[in-house]
Image 1: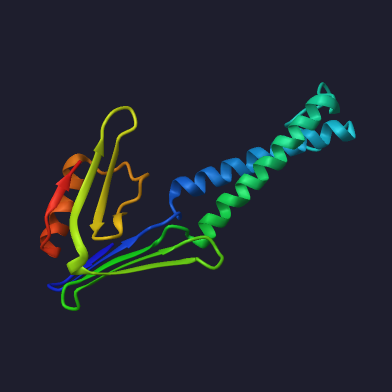
Image 2: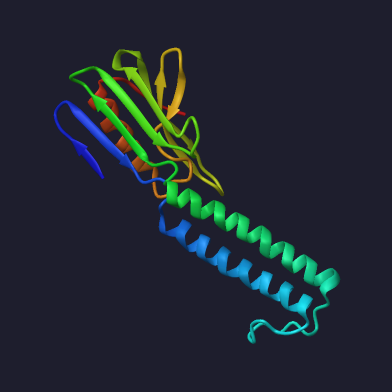
Length: 185
């Protein structure tokens, strides 16, 4: 969702609460529970879940390995669910021509630097830069070049829905709004 007026442009970013993340967190959780159930069944010598027969699996070494995979999967699943719960990567980009300020805000992982808030003066922005890498794994990233700070990414690196035309259109609109040049690399 974006909001624009004559002097202010606010762009909201989604973060980690995406359908794909929910899907993989659920699949990983259920799969790791299955591995853990088979490992526990082989240890106990009886089926905990009738769908997953474990009479042919010896506890050592197969049951131990299955239990290890189940526990590891639960940890990775917990990590994914935490990133979804905390909505890591969400935030906004705010460009205010009236005040001459650009604010970039992102949520991170809990801790001292949970809130990432960057604030720049518009006169320090040198250009809007597009980095395009085509091939098997294409990358199209929009950067804002800041004097003395380097390049700050404005789009996520995993956003694959941008076609070259869409990323160029977005960069051109932003460069026009900020009244700065646009570069393509």
